Length: 140
Image (cartoon, rainbow, N blue to C red; front, top):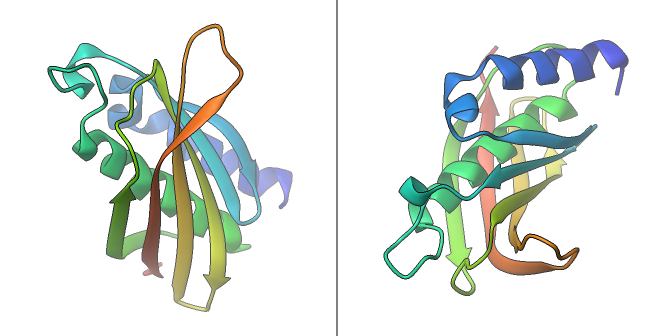
């Protein structure tokens, strides 16, 4: 991945009002891979304290989209065609972390696998809480 492409993705990420609202952090950007971290806020949780499934699905969508964009050499725009999330266990922790991998990057359609983990403060360990398969289409 060129430094220009990485800057395009980073700048796009930093302009997103939604990602600012979620206090999201872009952890890693490589060709075909993106990782994002979102700290826990009360509005993101259920009464029992775990992250709400909608928050996880939102992170899956955003992370998968940036992974798809990272796969293409040129600047582009992608939209979600299909998104499937399997929730593996309650997401109890202090932050969500996504790891999105392009499995198949075609001229217009890309398939991305995104894994979601929770992290707890003071611990380096991660707990795998969701796995997903996402199809993105390049429209520009």
